[in-house]
Length: 320
Image 1 (cartoon, rainbow, N blue to C red):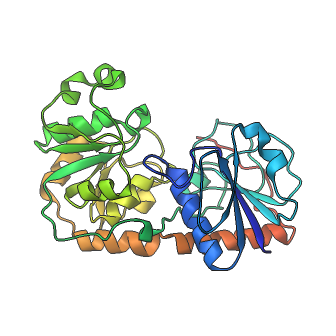
Image 2 (tube, rainbow, N blue to C red):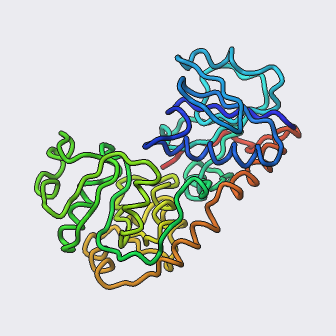
Image 3 (cartoon, helix red, strand yellow):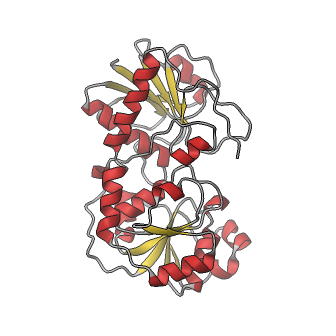
């Protein structure tokens, strides 16, 4: 096996500001290239990469005709809607439609994510931490933060703002702006509060600037999070997690690096009374959720598929 093609229909690479999947596949390709595999990206127009070949498209309908003939295995980051004549694997990054069967070689991104699809096949997301600035773990921590695409209701910026205000803590919002319709519709009282500061979409360097001064991530999501890159980015910056007790968060956030509850009062109490060390949070993320471990685990699955095996005997299907 030498030729690995990674295909994504989301944003261009490298990710500039928003782009979770793009950061994951970037780290994966980097590690594979270090191991001397030939890696080719098929990604949206405007993409570039110094360590892998890049083939771009304007319309995703072009993808079938762009796959190189010498491809050994394709790694899709979506479910293809066309016939694939190569061995392939699919990483499911989200929560698809309930009761809709997925291909046999689908991989999930946490144990909880897999279980909810009647599967036991998963690979944790990992990031190349060299793409992030060096962390100063000794900076004074003066606010909490929210890190997500704020326009997504399921990420629950309104809930995070309510928790921060009731806890009498300042909240820095990374991933959205104050004067948006969804803010006024969902929680005008908390959205306009002086304790809530909006910084918009940020790149890795600006993100770390705010995270290394944060007391923790407030993450009261309203869905079963498949993984949560905001969690590991925050931990890497030395921030404990104060989040919902559901989805992958329950396995990724241990009692040493955060507190989980679906009760806002309990989260507020934890924010104001519990103590976590920045060093423990940083080490935990760096050791457990890096791109090297992720690539190693994907290579095991690639080998299985290239040996003629499927990852499942029955199609995975989301039940909850």
